[in-house]
Length: 308
Image (cartoon, rainbow, N blue to C red; front, side):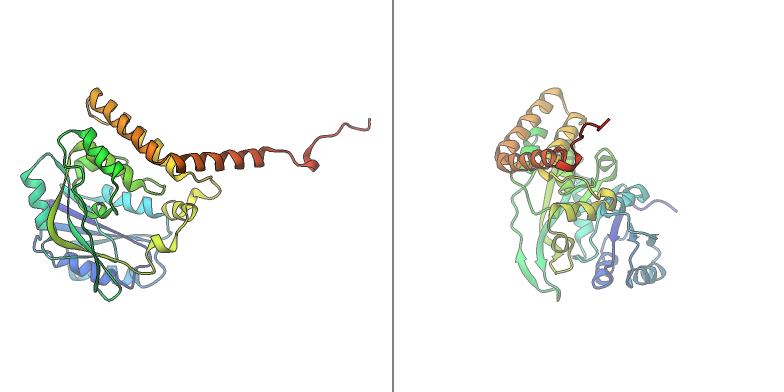
């Protein structure tokens, strides 16, 4: 049996409320040459049962269950390793796709080898599936030169709807994928922008669900978000913007672009630093304060001379 051209990877933890509808919207695609990998990250609700039932109904579906929750980053990234398709797409357990989503994005990647990421226009829907917001995003990373694409991505950031677009798996394997830190998808966008142009299909084919159980609502501060990405993060200090800056620099340094484009990309990152200087300064001051406080000896810990 030949490998499917497309892999759809759906990571999930305790998603019983919406995962059934999400799976069905994927199986209803008019483009049929795909596999659907369901990665259950140790769910404690009915998610595992729903996934197994879907696999029993459709041979394109396979279930990959972890007995323990090993974090969102691990669960997202193992889907890339399990994938067999030429093209790859992450899917969220609570979102929906219109039937022509895959066919539209496959056509884009087939027709233009210079495109690294294809996605569609999107709307937000609520718990009932009613549209509550229409996203009108500017065209990101459409320029010819890599450094200009990066500038577009990092200086005018989007709500990250592109995270659920279609990419070339061979290029995705050249990136850091989803890192175990807040906003790691921003680093992924930078890496994909260095590899090619982005293309937005001008049709609303992606329905992004807003509800109280979404991770962005459950884990609001950076420490909680980092633990969601990586449960082993306990006790570490959090400086999200500095971490993002470090990853931007690392990704650019190892990219395959020309030395000239690498320098220009570093210049764009410098402009990003300028725009975020207050946050960077605040995080630096906070870390310095914590280090000073932790490092200062208490009165009880100051050694005294022995009586002898």
